[in-house]
Length: 533
Image 1 (cartoon, helix red, strand yellow):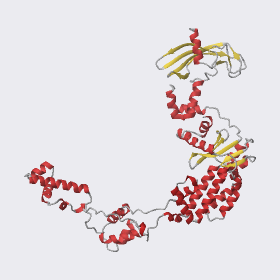
Image 2 (spheres, one colour; image 1 turned 90 degrees about the horizontal axis):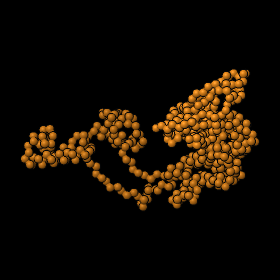
Image 3 (cartoon, one colour; image 1 turned 45 degrees about the vertical axis):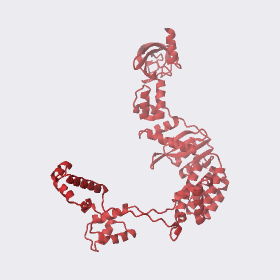
Image 4 (cartoon, helix red, strand yellow; image 1 turned 180 degrees about the vertical axis):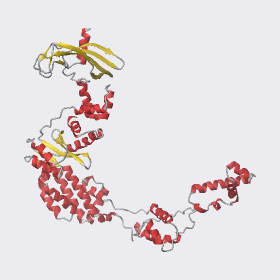
């Protein structure tokens, strides 16, 4: 029996010394383990003096990590000792088992660490659901309180740090995340994105040599004030993204030049569109109504020819006498299509429709305005008739005409590698560039910048800026002015291997962590989840 208990102690408490297992009671849903501490004494938590004089003992029932799908509850016999130091304010104290228990805790230390790991990964609601799978029923608030009690993480001092902003409330409240670019781990979170906060953080870490950032002015100012010895590196992805936006605007300014890609059908007999076959419109609004009338007409006349009376036909077909009479008197079903079922019925608007059509072609599509215009001309109908007629013109299908490509599509051709374009795209881009000198110059500047970025030729940037200023491309002039204000960081970004790509990944991770906590996360809890998970 003693060998079995020793084996249980090794299995249940492998890293905890001076614990003896007394018994194990296996129930349907729980596992109850009775144990006690075998140490000869304990230290007072206030004065630190060791005592072996026992005052009394009692049972504690902390929950432990589940085993075999069953909830584990420890039945610990703990002792209360007298404090031998007369000057100590504490007369008695209870022993604690290092690595197993703590004061006022209903969980063992290993269960606490397990729940903390679940909370760091899944936060409140999802963490509580996962804990129930482990056999530990806890609430989401308990998980969040456990995360709040974790010690504050210490921010290390990296050599290469990446800086970027994250949104606590998009468009209104932003913070700053700092990442060790070499280890790809976040090192700290700041509650705002002010230059003073970043400068204060950097000033406490004089060993920082490189600061990777985007071209936001508050990050540039904070890095300059807090780490003047560090080299600032502008992120290459943001540079290319800004160039892409400038290219979009430049192409949009020359959208008229893109019409060269639309085939000209005027005066060209070879490109004349084939005349479409005219389909005669039916004079009836609803084919379903017409088919139903035709079927009823044929049925009534068939029964009449069979010798049935009109009253008998009404009983068989569940029709009124007037309905049977109208069907029987009609020689053909088309005689029954009258009134609202006909398109060709007269309207008070008929003589004014040519005027409305002309005004529509001129670009006037406001039904109220058109009604006000035809009333002085003698129109006596209601506004609803005019509104219904204009509504039909809006919903009527328009002739399909060839359209030039969207400016964004042409900008994508310019920003893409030439070898990655299809043959058709390459020919269409070549046609556009031959027709527009400004877009041709834009393409040259974009591809020159791409060469600088891929081959890390940052020393060519001043010449590129001078070349851009010589062409009539206002959107590129705006980009060049912004780059010129941050020239040193941009040259470093186009030369050094460091980048802020890893920081962007952590920004996306912060978005996920923030949404997991459904608005209950303050900055302190979010910071712990980002740094400790």
